[in-house]
Amino acid sequence: MDYSPPYTITDRTVNLVSKITEIITYITIVDNMDSNPRVRRDNRIRTIHASLAIENNSLSLEQVTDIINGRRILGAPDEICEVKNAFEAYKILLKMNPFSINDLLQAHKILMNDLSKESGIFRSGGVAIFAEDHLVHMAPLANQVPHLIQDLFSWAKEAEVHPLIKSCVFHYEFEFIHPFADGNGRMGRMWQTLLLYKWKSLFGWLPIETLIRERQDEYSKVLGECDHRADSGQFVEFLLEAIYDALQDVSNTG
Image (cartoon, rainbow, N blue to C red; front, top):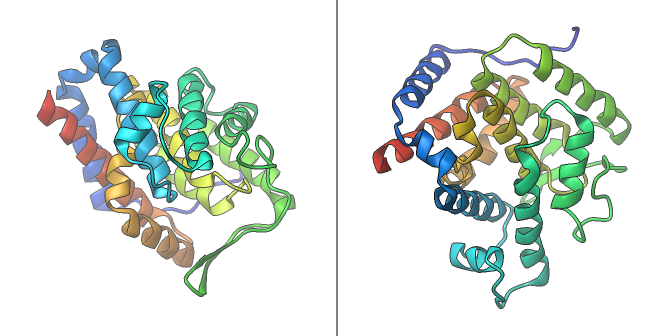
């Protein structure tokens, strides 16, 4: 396999992986989380609310909960559609193959149904991301996307890298490629969840997005800094810290 994304493993990275693995071992709530429908549903709603809030959806957690429970609310139609689509996508996510591009496209089609003319397909145009007036990221050309995603998925499937590190590197590289016209942030976070779930089922219900949302400015800043360095090591550390903190929250409520 020729493709290997650039990232640096620091002592802090190794320490975080060790701490996360240790806390997973001692979390007694894991079995309850897998078997308790109420806990699963509550955490899923928190995940959806946080992931959409990162993308500037203004609906509150209470409103998101009402939508998912079938109640009518006053809100922007597109924002309500985002919630309904995300819930449908997450319902089938854990049955998907994290190394299947077809599954990725299917998930995107559900997530962006009635929200994007290019739902379920890779983008056909260029993407430039700006913060205020300055360019922060220029994504690869659209005609490069299919082979870049194929390389990334092949690496994720074949590389002998710890699942925690692999999922974080995947998340960064996915956002760098920016394969879709819209919904890239949601899809990147969702696919990291799927990769981690295939390692430990706990991650299927762990609302990591809530911690990312609380550090949203840092999330965007670290993505940009890694672009400039051409190395995702700092982003890996950032996400591992969010994962560890999310696990601590679970442990403290267990």
